[in-house]
Length: 80
Image (cartoon, rainbow, N blue to C red; front, side, top):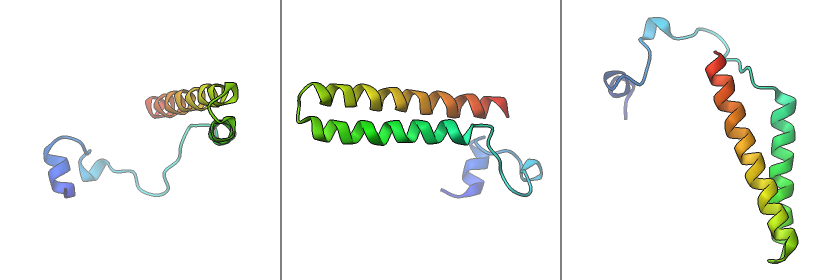
């Protein structure tokens, strides 16, 4: 799909409104790092848990971090 196709569909701003220079994010890098660490630890705990209680703890940790990541990125986009 080309840029012109995306523009025709209304998914892109006109070229004159594009931001020049470096893009920035309002999401906290520290919070994103913490969320990422919890997600990775959750995946490791899922694998080590071998279907027992630790597997469920890992699933909860991973799903919580996934929810936090989605919420944080949507929130940071809505602030721009």
